Length: 103
Image (cartoon, rainbow, N blue to C red; front, side, top):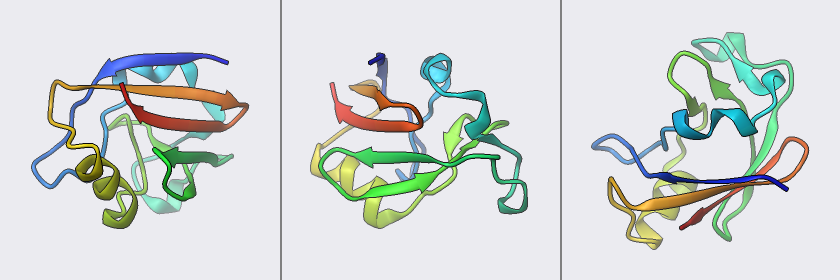
């Protein structure tokens, strides 16, 4: 399936990954609105490294996955010692199914 290698960009609290440079691999149905009440029509299965899979959508005005769980996102970033500018790979492993890896 499709994958994109992109530079890693996040905020100071390290609770999201900016997806702007990989938006073309995501199905339009997983893009939601600004808040949880405007979730996407369909959720994607997302796995950060070898961590648990979560069901999530993309906040369309921010180009990030909505879930910013420290247990999932920050753990992946810390476990892989990722810093802004490092590369990550976003793999589309099946329709509506993605894996994010250090790259």
